Image (cartoon, rainbow, N blue to C red; front, side, top):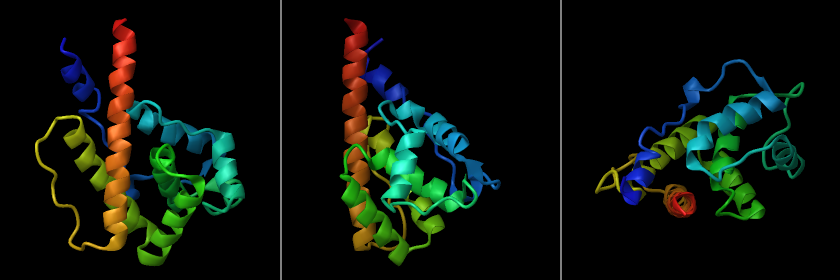
Amino acid sequence: MNREFKISQSIQNFKLPRYDDLPEVELYLDQTTAYISERLEILGDVKLTSSMISNYVKHKIIRRPVKKRYAADQIAELFFIAVTKNVMQLSDLKAAIELQRRTYSTKVAYNYFVEELENILPYVFGLKTDLDEIGNEHTEYQHMLHNIIMAVSYKAYIDKYYANLRQEN
């Protein structure tokens, strides 16, 4: 099987839950870690551990869990962090989330993030030739998010390419 085909097929069915599809019941730390990690496994080197989440809480990047349970807003922000942490510094992640909170509700921002990721990833992996237009506005936040997701997608492609190459050898 052709390497390019194999790499592009690896993300063909990638989908993340929309905000309204996130768990209605709040999750404990280990459940949150498992829930997010399972859905991001297809991206390869996108890891999220319990200690990472605790560190994000400690650095006030996400809000503290209530009674040790994480709600939809925190889970949505953790999806963003898990996907983008390999291309952004911790301080920039914090600034991006603070900007998002001032600009859009977590629900709106998360759904936009998911739509952009599901739009850009297949483009970078060669499954589509053009990017779709996502959203009605063209704000500074959306432009920044678009570029972050481009970086994430190219990094995911490169990681998959070399992982595939190592497997062949």
